[in-house]
Image (cartoon, rainbow, N blue to C red; front, side, top):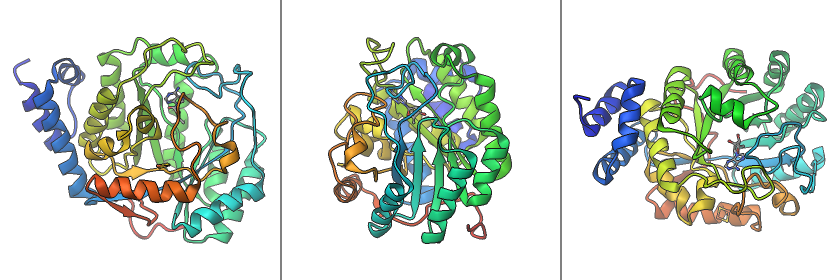
Amino acid sequence: MDETVQDLLVRLYTHHNLEKEQFVFILDHLDDESKKMLFELANKTRIEHYGRRVFMRGLIEFSNLCKQDCLYCGIRKSNKTVDRYRLSFADILACCEEGYNLGYRTFVLQSGEDFWFSTERMSELIRLIKKQYEDVAITLSVGERSYETYQAWYEAGASRYLLRHETASPALYAAMHPTMTFANRRACLANLKQIGYQIGAGFMVGLPEQTHEDLALDLLYIAQLQPHMIGIGPFIPHHATPLADSKGGTVDDTLVMVALARLIVPDGLLPATTAIGSLHPRGRELALQAGANVVMPNLSPIMVREKYELYENKICTGDESAACRACIEVRISAAGYTVDMQRGDSTRITPLRFF
Ligand code: 5AD
Ligand code: FES
């Protein structure tokens, strides 16, 4: 390679994409000094696009039933030790009420792939929330459905959809997802984008056997798809899954991928994920300093928090929503940023698009 890692980082900062081999070269050769430079460039890029604001999303984990069997996931269908729950509409609306009063203007409705929430039922729920809270944005994160279903939910008032691609390596994807296909995952993301959602893709760092080449594929996919949001977190082994004895991802490797994603999608919404916060006491703060600009504090009822255990030692499971709201504000300020409670649309979206 003619160029050094630092040359490549400057090129990425300016042009927002590289060749696959160049990404692999960076990942293979990143030393402490170039890592520092990477984080500085990422933070600079983020400040150019979003200032020091950090957007807040209220996360409501409304069902942990799931028909899929992803090897890494604690709520996979085969895990018979999970205490399954499904919140009622009234419970979900109560979470929204609490969240609204705490200042949240975005709700992320997340669940396992629970088809009790049919096209119609989910549409009704979306309409109920939009009727009650006209100025909120609704984000869905409920997995793979048909084009028609996504369309119906969009028409009901959902405007954003999170569906991580999980890994852009076809072989690794196949190994991790016995009940799903790589092709359908991508088709779902393409459908969501076509319908008009602000979409969120993303991946895990440190999956078993994941190579730098695989991670380079994740970056190329992000560059090509240009999602509005990109969720990147470390894989954390869960004791009741087939990957219980795996090593898992590291904070450092995850921060590098967050920073590279910021350079590739400068106007991206990048969450400082709960997973990175669960691996390190200041994980989310470090992610903000590496280019992240969103946090998603939990609004789920305290009674169910521990049951939505995708991975081990998840943070915030014992904390009331109000406590998380206060806690995260202190953390954001201490890291040198400010809380922004607005809807927090991607700057790519024109101000005319309101729902
Ligand atoms: N470790 C880290 N992240 C996980 N997810 C699921 N299981 C784990 C795990 N064990 C992530 C997936 C999913 C998101 C909701 O949580 O990327 O898309
Ligand atoms: Fe939940 Fe700190 S954000 S306790």
